[in-house]
Image (cartoon, rainbow, N blue to C red; front, side):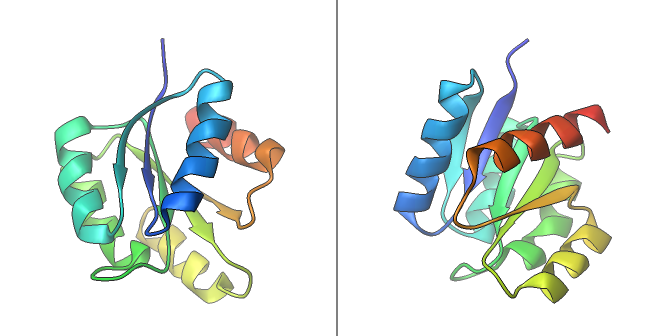
Length: 121
C-alpha cells in the first residue's frame, strides 16, 4: 500500500526538496500547502497518511494549524519541520498532536526515519 504524504511549507524550494526525497523512496505526495489554513482544508480533502508541517508560515503557522488538522483528518500523522532553535515550539506541537519532528536543512535518512517512526505508532 502506498503511503500518501502532504507537504506543508511556505517555501516552494523546501516542498520541492522534500517531495523529491519522498518520491524517490516510493512515497506518494498527494497534496501540498503553503500555510496552516490551506493545510487544514487539504487535510480534510485528501486525508493523507503523513503530513510534514512547517512551523513558521504566513497566515497561520504550523503549530496553530495542528488542532484543525487533527480534527479534519484524525488518522493523519503529523511530522513538524523546524529550523534550529525552535525547540519550544516543537514541544508545543507534540503536545497538540504532532508525532515527530525533523530539522532543516533536511537529512534524507532522518526524514525517512521520522516517517517510519510515525507509521509504526
